[in-house]
Amino acid sequence: MTDFTLWDIVRNLLLAGRWTVVLSLIAFTGGAIVGLLLTLLRMGGLTPIRWLIRLYVDVFQGTPLLMQLFLAYFGAAVLGFDVSAWTAASVALTLFTSAFLCDIWRGCVEAVPSGQWQASRVLGLNYLQSMRHVILPQALRLAVPPTVGFSVQVIKGTALASVIGFVELTKAGTMLNNAAFAPFTIFALVALGYFILCYPLSRYARHLEKKLYGAGIR
Amino acid sequence: MTLDFSTLLPYTDVILEGLVTTLWLTVVTTAAGIALAILVAYVRDGSPTGTRAVISRLLGGYVEIVRNTPFIVQLFFLYFGLPALGVPISATAAALLAMILNLGAYTAEILRAGIDSTLKGQHEAARALGLSRRQSFRHVVLVPAFSRVYPSLISQCIIVMLGSAVVSQISVFDLTYAANFIQSRNFRGFEVYLVVTLIYLLLAVGLRLAFEFVGRRLFAFRQGGSS
Image 1 (cartoon, rainbow over the protein chains, first blue to last red):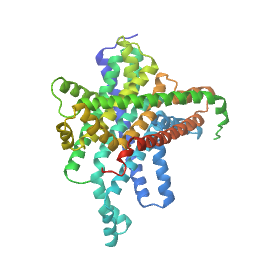
Image 2 (image 1 turned 60 degrees about the vertical axis):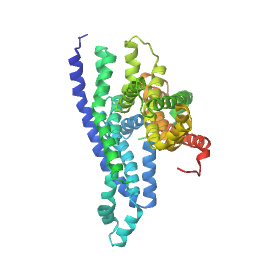
Image 3 (image 1 turned 90 degrees about the vertical axis):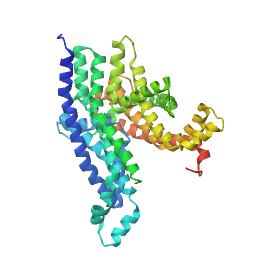
Image 4 (image 1 turned 45 degrees about the horizontal axis):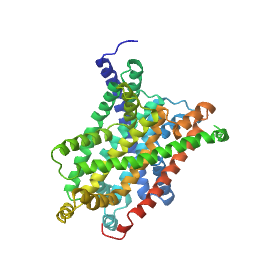
């Protein structure tokens, strides 16, 4: 057994931490794109489509992320694909994120007073035009604080990808612990890594929320 | 691609055992986590001075650490870290402790939002009327705050129940552990995880209904009233 210095541990955690950041970015970007499409469809779509999207959101919010990861991993195998932990984690986290963002953003669009809708439609704007020029700009201001806040959940969610063998911060921690057996130090450092990523975002979300309240909206 | 759910039938009792564990972990966590949150809110309430100010700051640190790190890391830290410090802890105890600390931190923050929205004058009026700090905290601050944030509280308890799937990773025999166990025996991963995911979904719906039922009883006096 080789001896691990504190620097060895920190260096390996930092290297693995890159993949936590990359996976978070993939999940958040992918989730935002899918989530935006779902939000638009849900606001203007036909009743069965709206109903389906609602079901989609409820299913992802009502089941463990860990199960979603397992299903993406084993489900693909059943369909005949041999997916890597990378693909399974990216797909599962993207879908998970899209469901939560769709729910958050729907709330923001609905918070824009209905008179705004009626006025823009009366002025002759069609659905897409009213959405683009009247509703979305207002909804966007409301949406920023909770969206930043949710990004913290996405970063923390990527820790579960370790369970299907994706080597990110948490998995690197367990692997290092198996070799160096210094669980207290290692998991404290892993936690610190997440804290450094998440805490500024939490603070920023709270700051934005206060600013919004201060501006007298809501 | 063929799905075969009949291979699951011999494992019904395994799933049931896991379900029972997940359920009792959730129930105990809900009760203890909310109690912990009330305690934290009580200490942090108002503008604490002296020793209470120091404890209040430490509790603030606890809340922020829990909210900004993943549950799985908190669990590993307690399960692997405590024995290394000479504090032996079983997997179940570590799971329960991690869940309670997690729910406690989130609920403390939820409660604080509810308490902040209570008018300051009400608190002062209660004190002026001769209620002790504890009495006014309980009747004037806590109960109205609770009824106001009750919907967020329900969601948080459901999130913790779903998050408890992670305790399977330190070999606590919960619903997810049961799924992994069956998968390792019959190699029907997708079918097992699909069924267990569905059970979690039903649990989430059931938990919400139960909470709403209790809420209607608990806050009945506020229905139709102001705020």
